[in-house]
Amino acid sequence: MGTDSNGELADTDLLALDRQVCFALAVASRTVIALYRPLLEPMGLTHPQYLLMLALWEHDPRSGRELAGLLQLDPGTLTPLLKRLETAGYLTRRRDPADERSLAVTLTPAGRALRARAERIPPAIIDRLRMSLGELQDLHGVLTRVIGAATSAPTEEPAR
Image 1 (cartoon, rainbow, N blue to C red):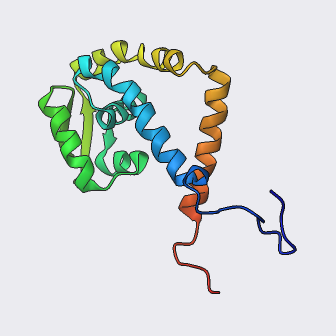
Image 2: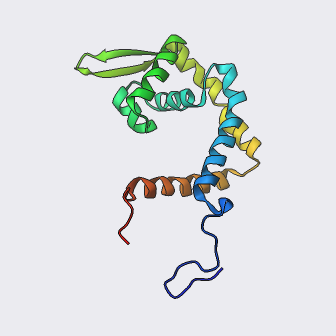
Image 3: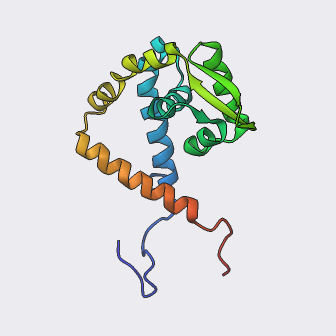
């Protein structure tokens, strides 16, 4: 697979499914998240709820706006997650007394205690993936760069 005089890929089917970054990312995402499911179910968590709890275990309390930004979720997606976790007894949602427009999300004692059980998840995932911690850290770095590039990429088609 060489490049032509314009630096473009020559003799390459750019529409081949197995060459699509979007396809590889979609399949990787689904299959890796599926590995989490049997670990999270006994805790009563879905993967999106687990991510939200990770953010709160890292820093508690957080505002709803801060959580939405960290998790890259819109409020319409975040609100049902918060409601379910509140119903489960893992967090509380209250208006911030300093700013009534802001929602303060705080872990309950049960939510804080759940962290001890969650600490077993990362080693179990590393084991199930059969990859070294270094390989996973490298992958994380590459994916973080992909996210950054995709986030800053123009959304309009370039003029031809």
